[in-house]
Length: 355
Image (cartoon, rainbow, N blue to C red; front, side, top):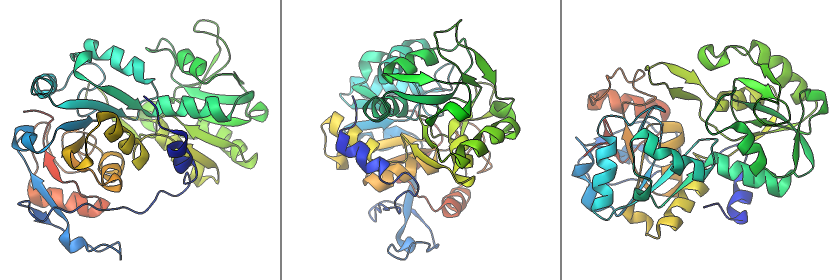
């Protein structure tokens, strides 16, 4: 499943500044309220969110569920506590499920990987990934161009080479001076042409674990001077690893490139078009659809912009920030402070994606 050309054009026409937040209020819910007023067109005194023990508290309100992957369904290695059972129960109840992920993998690769993570692929209608939309855009817009390809070192499943193949007729170069554009797919290496085992890989240091831009900045500054556009196939900033540590993702490199004066186009959340595409694929009115995610910037903001209800999972990327523990819902006071600080408010908050 892919976005329409009109939806992609809407994203790329706004690639430097994201649109202002369209907040979604629910006065009927038992709620906590915010007193902040950052947006003059919206009364933040009316912001509400409801804490819930599990999705069983709201399951009857919705027919469709848009699910984030990392930090909600799994940690990249296995299903998180209660998530696999939750998916199975929702599907058995006739609910429609679709994945919306800031993953540089293609949609079919995302679905194919689910059984290894503890999920049944047949339980999902489809997957919409940032990588799928990025590769489609490149195939339509950047043919016969040369890319400086930032990606993951091999071995990696799926192989970064499979992503390049989906981009159509592009050439990979190893020198920024030869490039027509930058492509942020991963953060480990700059990869040259050819399949796994043939392609050269230039190491980009320990950015993944430390966030150190020393090696990257040299290249990014040259690219900004050349006014090269950077395409970001995974706009996430951080990812929670299986051991609980935080890793740095391509979205941070994109943000750095913008700081250095570069122009970027990022695909995936929080662009509302990707949420709207999921709703269309589910074939349901958006009032009967809810998004479940763990990022205020990508998940909650995107759902709000699209006018879709959201469930914020507190045990994901913001767990340490809110002073919480995995699987334990923080106090409403701490949650309110977190949402107020980021100026992003979900419809619901819960500790884990479970029933």
